[in-house]
Length: 347
Image (cartoon, rainbow, N blue to C red):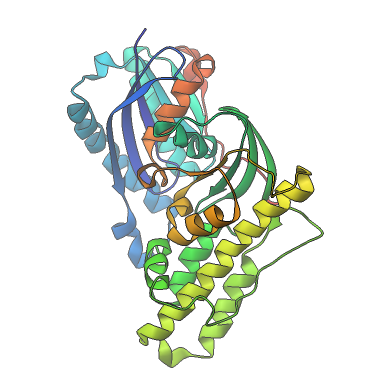
């Protein structure tokens, strides 16, 4: 049976819908349409995500994005066989907006609905472009999460390492704010770093050797703020800012490399030199060019999610639902699905 899945993603500040065609078990998929509305322009004046504003913008964008996506796929709502929506983790207001949108369609057309953990979906998005066997080691790096997980299947992920405070993507964005680079800053810092010297300044890496796999970025952000407070007149010095970007980015990236190495050696008890299990990198920060370079230099068998599917997007949501058909909830039981803000506690 051919499945036509409408994916809905509104966990933070991107409104995204996708339509995906799949066979019964999700082993063969075809993306028919993917459209996203970014709130970056709206949120720039605030220097980051404002939850209430993000939720309201989703309400405005969803009907328009749905119209464009259906037209691009060449189908009608009546052709859809099932729905998939991000339910956790994320901003509660944003999540509820997407969930209620999906529930409304489910109610009108009596369609089943899959509740999606979008962190799982970030890593499993690798299957949209590559065939990766299980198990694999996943490095999920985004604006809200930095996790190292052991993946035995689409819905079988064990957390082996994580940040205790800020995520890597958050470190990029907040660092960009200190440097006057606007929001979001990850892509800008990546580009500026290519023009700078990564050894120009020594920013701290929180090793926490006694806690394998655990990482922290709060100290790094503070170090950047203290450093820039000493050089308030150099924000317009392009060479200086390029060097700062390169050095700051290097600390973020090397932390991730060190912690993956640590998990392999001290948590999994495997010699990193002989470790050949696939390593999958997903999430918004996976698009960072320096991270990809460093991980490929250190490890064998590294696979990075296509940049098109790195940021929050509905293609990965529909794809994950396609891969777990047994988790689809029938109508009307699916109308009981609710939002959950957290997936893991930072401790």
